[in-house]
Length: 278
Image 1 (cartoon, rainbow, N blue to C red):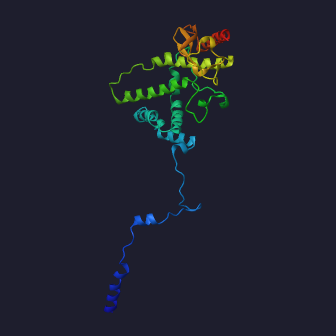
Image 2 (tube, rainbow, N blue to C red):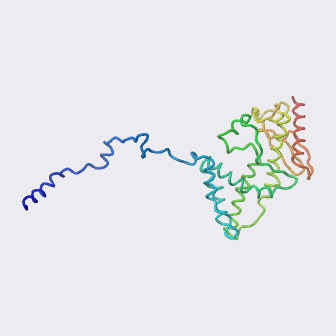
Image 3 (cartoon, rainbow, N blue to C red):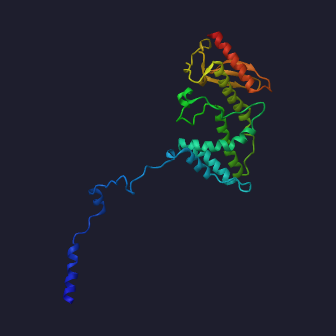
């Protein structure tokens, strides 16, 4: 028995003289096996923010925001700041989802700052997509035809920053940082949107008109004018239409006069000038 055991023990090393090949050589010399179409190990496509449906991405954004609490408002305020200055800059999809949440959240506060007799409409019913220029059609969904929406977005960014500073330090001065925004920027952008609205009805403004050359004289302005070349020079007492950095028409405005009334008078004067020039 002893001899037999010794024979078996002595024979064991002879079967393992050569060490197994390293894993690197196996990985190099062995071709990869592609899993079949029904294999549970078949790799799935990579999932990213851009591949998620909009309603799911919006639900994710909503879930990141904690409930607002009067006793501990800091987490809620800091999360809104993070949405504004971080998450919305990740991609186009996260921008759309974040701004959808932020605009609906801050719109009531924005409306309370509108000064009478000014009006507000940052989300109008836009014309059919087929009639819009290429830059306003999808997938360029972050570009808005309504110029007042840009004012709302600046209000959101400023409001989030001011809220964070007011809770992070006692040295922050509570100044009226929104004075110029609602006395100048908001009525100016609203007047431009109204001129686009009434001007398109009168046939003097178009969204698809070709761009103007910078050297085009007033006497040779085309009809209709491209809305991209139109801006407004706004003051409490006077409002003018600016085309290519030149004031073409202006009207005086009473302090209590609405922007709708001023826009209609500007469009009427603009139609008169274009008709006289044409």
